[in-house]
Image (tube, rainbow, N blue to C red; front, side, top):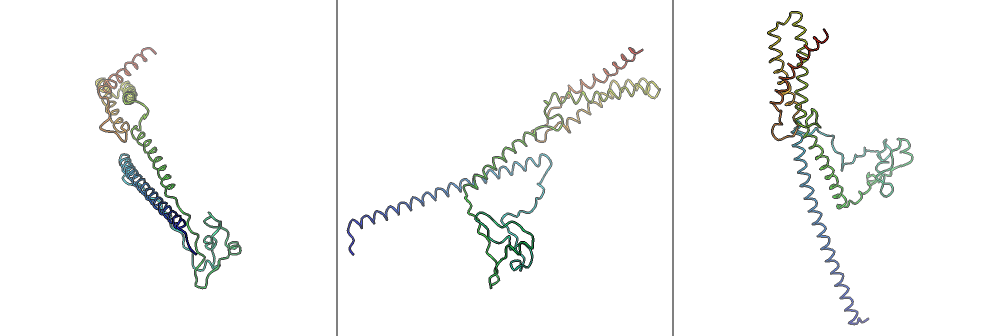
Length: 274
């Protein structure tokens, strides 16, 4: 059987095309692998940055280390007890038997039904039925899922940072409005104490000098320092650069005006009722 020159030329062209196709496929596969490695490196950098940011948030709210979680069971499978495949008891034979395509195992059945419905054969060597092969994993799909999870983690991290920049006391108020409310509340509490002192002075427990000293200096000072401490304790965000303003002159003015004003209002009320 002789082969013509044209047939040799056609065979050579076919081999050359196959060789070029193989080289092109190898180059494409190499480029895909490089892209996958680059995506993995970028995702690793994002996860590392997220971990550092979470550590900072934890330290800001007073948590040094996250609480230990339950041990992970990913990638591990429970081992079958000896003799389970021979009907020695348990549903390990049903769980280890291969099912339909895409199904990891048969549904769990009671012990008796599992023994009757799904008997397992044991080879003479003692080896049970081989486990079902794991489905192939597409790295591109897994990386896309990981990227979406990282985006979701970034979104929740930004929300946590916004919440961490708000104080526990009146978080939606401005610093000035919060300070005015705190100092005014402390001054109002001191005004209630003024009324108690006035009643005590009426029954002779407190003399006039002591009453005037508490009204003009003592209770306003107590109200001022009380507001100062409240703003420092509950008016400070968990994450803030420096010390938030406490508006000391404004607080001093509010407290040292509100307490004597409450006393004067009480006197006017008493005289009006008479």
